Length: 282
Image (cartoon, rainbow, N blue to C red; front, side, top):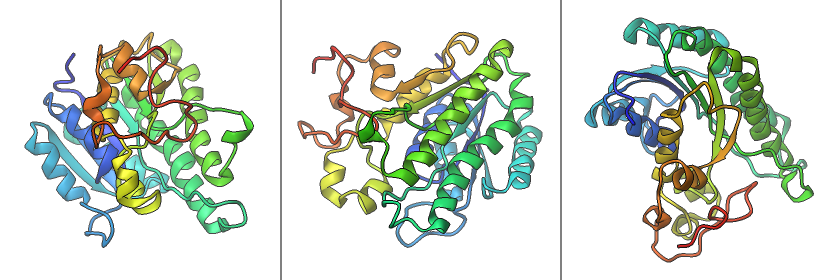
């Protein structure tokens, strides 16, 4: 498997999972155009789009940092055009940008609701739509959206606002898979079985204790890498889980290397029932 010479356009990759995916692709010698809002250091969040670009280039890739907001479709179109001008095309589109608010309907104000749905749903649609004309020219085009399987059991229908935003991403990705299946453009979703050690987990879900019950971001980036190397014409329209991809596609036999704290009881993510694939024995 190799993505050498391929070009990826990814939203929201200043840090965390998005940056991990970008670096994993860049390690093959791929080009990465990253669009994000963080141009200046944030008091509670590590990194900027420029420090991310430096990290991408340090592992062997070429980086094009583009400051912009995925909610602005004109800015997205301009960013994609800039990436194509720099690298000659786009082979991979990754929809990573997301906002999180786990409050109830009474707690999530309309402004917060609009923000999540604008970034997750509108942003995914805008980025995918802008990339598709260029993906048509790739020999193995992939769209990968970082969102969950759509589970309609009652326990998974809350928190309402966040559920709607993340499910909206998934619906967009799965719809695109069907619209462009005949052209061989793959579109899949990817989601972790456990919490992943990110700033969101640290700041919103329990601090150091939650981080200790999480897997490393590499569980996401290694799974994404495996997906992006699959044949686009046939590997599409799926709601994938990171650990399942690692075991079933990448041939990983021991997931414990991804644990932040070896032997810890892992925290299961939203919309997932178990930390490990069916039948997996650790």
